[in-house]
Amino acid sequence: MPAIGNGMIVLQNYSLRLVAALLLWLALVLWGSAIVNYFPALSAVTTQAYRILASAIAPFVLVSAFWVHNPRNALGTGIILVLSGGIALAMQP
Image (cartoon, rainbow, N blue to C red):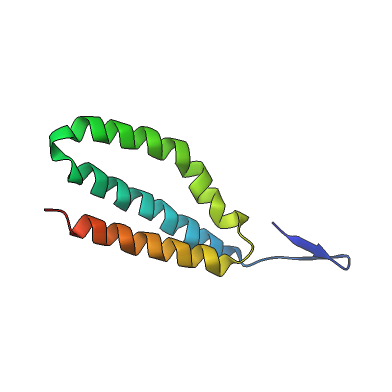
């Protein structure tokens, strides 16, 4: 959201926020894949449950990159979630 000060509009760095939103989306995909792979016997149930959960929280997760005051915080959170989701997916049996 543009900050207004002294009669001028100061634009924030939206490229970092866009990258952060994409990283948060990738984290949802990685964590969802890890959860579905963790329960192979219940694959159909966990896949449907994850789709419902991801559909419900995805808009809030993606928009959260634009809600924070500092775009670097959003970028750092996205990187941490992607790395941890990738590690969780890689540790699957």
